[in-house]
Every structure is written in structure tokens, then in C-alpha cells.
Length: 420
Image (cartoon, rainbow, N blue to C red; front, side):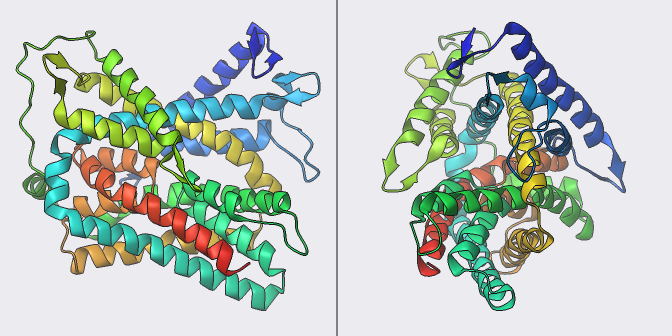
């Protein structure tokens, strides 16, 4: 079988599939462990994937492959494991965000119209605070450790993108770096990648725990909070009469069409900016979910299909990102960078939550859904849906996410340019 430009045996591919399901099974078991009402949920898959990557897909300081998984996926002297993991990650991302878009679509535009200014403000505030905290850390590191400014800015902007689990910001930062007196552009791109990998762990876990712990600290009555959410984002009446033509029983055809269009839309570039696969699939799914039909043809997948695809997508995304992140984390970890990453994750969330609660007067679940969107955190949304026990929180996420997506790309580029 020809794959990724090399020849991989059926046995090798079966081994990769075995690893994926092994991580998933152990991850869900870990996610079930509950301490005082708090659990990792699906993010347990990410922790197991991270450990799996560290021990079985490890890379030493010289860049040599030392893990068994990578060696199993060798063709000649070249490993194709990174490409395989990227496929798993991207497939999961498409399944997840497309499902979220369809689920949020029916009530999205009504909710957006009612809370439009709040979502814009909160998304901007979260990213601006993240950018300011990154700038402060750059200044501190330069004064205390006296490292070259180009190295520090590349590393810390990478940390910012990892703290916000933002692939678009990561890509924009790499595209913005240029040759300097001390470093080539390729070297600085590698430094950005290191920062992203170091901060990604807490970027995932921090937001996941935040959306679970805040309701407990607030001593929230979740039944009351779900009622408030329904009042601010009421259930939109279905546009389907039941007589529409179903392209297939479960809605796979409509789902696939949106995924294809979303990938195409996300691939268009405007300068260094693009919606990416995430933004393209989310926006197209929101539109299709809003209209639900074209003429007499139903374009809305079954609810059961969307729920399964959402969870399956999140699981695959966390496995793909976690295994690769585990290798980078072991190779490049330094405590000071990890602490910077914690600051860039926690500060925007805390300030954003306080602002949304006391200034914007958003109810708790709308607030937390917007925090997930503002932090561009896919795993945290999955956790919040489980904590809130309602899919409606996806509406606030979907409304805030595009604002944060654009803002974090611009902020990352500005930081690289300013501290060049």
C-alpha cells in the first residue's frame, strides 16, 4: 500500500489503528475518574496521548527517534508517523467543528443578534489580554535572562498560540518571522514550534478544568443556569416539515458536503490570514444548520449522527495533537516557558470571565461558552457541553470563536513585528 509517498504494510497501518484505539480506551477510563465532582472527561484522552507520545514517540535532544511507535512507521530511514498523526488530528477536527456548527446553527443567528456586541467585546478582550501578557513576558525574559530578542519573541509568541490552542496563530507567527543577524527564518520558525508545543498541554487542560471548576466556585444551580441559557438563546423552531427528501437515513451526505465546502473555504488565503479548516467548516455548518433545507431537500443530519461525530471528532483530534505534542514537550521543556504559558492561559480567561459577568452581564453558561470560543479551545467546549448537559452552549462558542480567530492571528503577527 502506498501512503505518504512511501510504502507502508497493512501490518504497520494496523499497528497505528491499534495505538489510536488503545489511547482512546485508556483515555476515557482516565477521564471517568472524578475528584470532588471534577473530571477530565474526554480530555483524559489527551493526557494519555501526551504520555504515549512522550514514551513511545519520543525524540531526544539531538532529534533522534527513540520511541517504538515512530520506529514501527519507518520506511527506510524516514518516519511517516507525523503525517499519520496529522491526518488523525485533522479528521477529528473536521468531524468536531462541523458537528458543533450544525448543532448551533438553528439558534445561532438569533443568539448572535441578541448578544452580538457582547461576543465581539469578550472575544477581543480575551485575545488582547493574552497579547499583553505575552508582551510582558517577552520584556521580563529579555531583562532577566538576556537572551536575543528575536529568539525570545519567537518562543513566546509560540507559547501564546499554544496557550490558546490556536493553529491559525501558530501558522501566522511562523509565516511572519524573517531572517535576522543571529537567526535564519527557518530557525525562528522552529523556535515558534517549540513554544507552541510546550504551552499546548496547559492550554488544553487549563481551560477544561476552568469550565468545570467555575460553576462549583460560583455554587451555581445548573438547572437554573440552563433555564437562563434557554431564555437568552431560545430553541429555534424546526424548518423541516418531515416531507423533505432525505439524501441518506443519517445525514452523512449533507455532513460530507459541508465538510468539503468548509475545507475549500478555509484554504483560501488573504495575505497570511485564512479561516483554516476549523473556521471554514464551522461557518459553513452554521449556515447549513440555520437553513436546514434547500427547496425540498433536507440538508440537516440527524441529531444522533451529530452527537456521535462530535465526540468521535474530539477524541481523534486529541489523540493526533496529544501524541505529537508529547514528543515536543519532552524534547524542549523548560519550567520558565511552561510558567509563561500558564500565565497566558489563565490571565485572559480570568479577566474575560469577570468582564463578561459584571460588565456584559452574561449568564454563566453563555459566559463559559464564550470563554471557550475566545480561547479557541475545542476540547473545553466538549467538556462544557458535558458539564452543562446542554448543546446550547455551542452557540456562544460559535459566536465568539470567529472574532477570536481573526484577533489572535493579528496579535501574533504584531508581536513578532514589534519585537523584531
